[in-house]
Image (cartoon, rainbow, N blue to C red; front, side):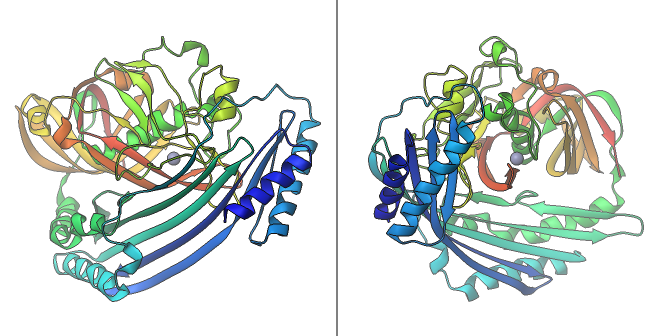
Length: 480
Ligand SMILES: [Zn+2]
């Protein structure tokens, strides 16, 4: 496969490119879904091809083909250069690339049990058993599904990169819906978007869907008659780690994508409220807030050996002691922003998509409190978990989130269950009210396999290390 990538890069250089890289990508995806005790769908798909980027002047060109022959690869390289030449003819700013060592390497994540080698019948039985148990415990609709992605990519650049990677990702999700007379309630496990990682089938086994099926079905039913979450202008709010993962994804992760900050990327989910002139000085949150983007975390969904530009995975500080200090970047955006090196966050969704800045594992570093300590330290508060709905403005500043479930906290104890809890906030004010942070034993790497960005749209796989957190004086209300 390296031969095709080399042919593409050589052809792009011969056509005048000052830089070129090519990725051959072979990706298999398998997913299965069950409903109410029966397997309903099975998808097995494969895509393989080559994508080439060429840089002429300050213009990028990209071209891809599914035809894996040396001549088709060379043609793709020449086409990428032709497109780059056309875009370079439009006046723009100077585009440079930050330096990166040209490595020749091979990388693969740890997989104990190959998910595609587990018999389909066994995987189906697992979903059937979980959905049957949910039905038996009061769910009107019980759904469970898993996904597996098995990706091999070969990268060659005109600077001497020659890197192959084999990345296996999988995960599962399930939910129970209970229908009442006037409303519907749902409980998901382990979260609304399931749980996924760069691991083998052992991840799905550890989730133990079956053991959690009865509980979530009963909670969905109990929510139908639970009291509506009372409204408060300002109350102490404890947020479970799954909802925190989405809070981080939407209000920190997307906001620190350098292509959004530079205004290059506005499609799908908008730009960013952050101003590069403020980096290193601006308060993003309280001193307890430490956020990193770290693609080296074993098993997390945003982990890899190298990004699609050949930058080695490395941790990047995003928020340190509450101050905004870093961004998610690639070689061109980093150079444009005057940063010394790329953050190594550039990835493409398939061989036929131009790699772009994507979240790696953007998450909170743990603190020192346990969830039980947070509850015990709260006189009057609300505990919420599992995302149900989200809304955030296109600068990633004002947000409202709804959760599947909540509990009142009175005098340090968990009280009655409440339904349809929501909370609202403004990024830095909200993060500034963070005053208790879960500890290392509660640190969990949530994986989101469906982050949309770009035009044409690309789906990204992102990871979010997270812990339960307490925020002071948050506005909590009711919807639905
Ligand atoms: Zn997203």
